[in-house]
Length: 221
Ligand code: ATP
Ligand code: MG
Image (cartoon, rainbow, N blue to C red; front, side):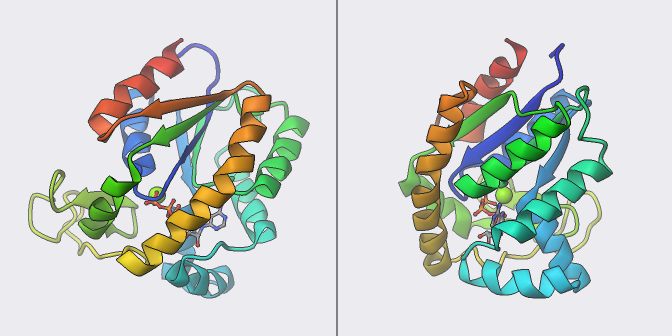
């Protein structure tokens, strides 16, 4: 990876964006990642004003308003020196509406650091509900475990800190269905937008072990 990489990971809830991000960060230490869901959950944990507002949306599987998301993520990008032409980063979960994508393009264009690769993870949607139901997270770090194929060393404890793992409030069948429907609706114009910009790629597979090498290869070419 010689040229600066600014990557957007798209994919349905439970398609493995978080897992792929973690693997990419291990492989390419110059990358920094921003996960919009993790940023929101951190606000909720800290009880900030944004957190209080966002919690209602997360619980019910509806989207946080675009304006809130745009300012939150641009602030994160600034904080990690992401707004320069040499910056390397990956975004997970933002932008996820057409309007967010347009706003992000404006901000990045101004700073000559626009996205150069968009990867949509394509995982069979019949598989991911089961995955979501067996998923546990360490909220402070965003580390993800699966009771089935990536269990923690000690049951329900984070491998690194030993702290408790929890289930996300939105990782249940009813809310998941809403998140998935919303995703399938929003992805259509978003995909078209990035296809027109000529930076969209799709990577398909059943598990992250199959998908990850394909994503890595895209970044190396
Ligand atoms: P997964 O984490 O399994 O990939 P996901 O992509 O649905 O699933 P998160 O990205 O963690 O989950 O987002 C959780 C919730 O946070 C969303 O359901 C939504 O309420 C809110 N959210 C996250 N990113 C955005 C965004 N860009 N715009 C609006 N709301 C968002
Ligand atoms: Mg996620």
